Length: 267
Image (cartoon, rainbow, N blue to C red; front, side, top):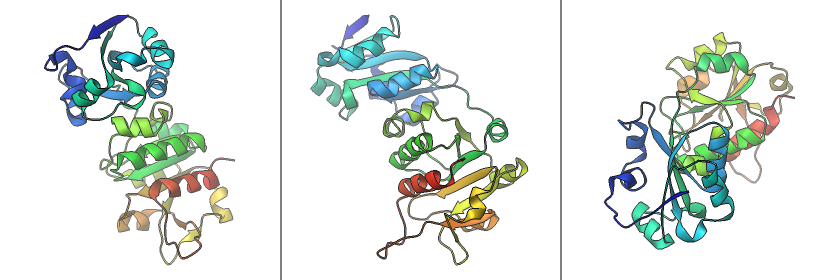
């Protein structure tokens, strides 16, 4: 293992962990597809299993054993920068989950048309910016039978560190990509019925039998607070609500997604 003790905080080799923002990593000039940071052994393992290429680790000195050690051993002689926990916290500005980060190369995203041709149950996220919600939606999508996640251009990046960590690495397991501006039309041309999760006067219940009968169904979720755009709701084939009790009017978008995925999964 290529273990390198951190003695110089200003070393350029540490820029990817300490000084480049996630947006800057995405557009890193040295790598065509850009970079991202994966955090924790489980998330890094799932990224490696999906074929993503690591370029460097940042690891807590006292944690170079167990899962962490197994992950490092998989990656040959790439640099493993190490220091005490407090030093790494000061360097990165946050406490590392399970004491480990890995800088990895991005890959070219799949063509959305290929995903729409291949799968029958997909999730569409419109302008979901909160990385915690995004990661939680991916985790539920993976666990509850959704085959792919499609994002509008206004969404946050699923490979941002927090999104990937909250997803428990499922962003590397569930196929995903960004849609174009005319995404509702693209879905319909691919044979999908679109299901807008929104509260309107003509919303149908999520357990309506007509939804289960659809062969290809896209579940469309909007941003926290504002929900889906009005023109999106109008353009979708169905407007669907989750029945509520105790005067609660709505759920967090990630919680609503989990309910919808379970009910509308492919039988």
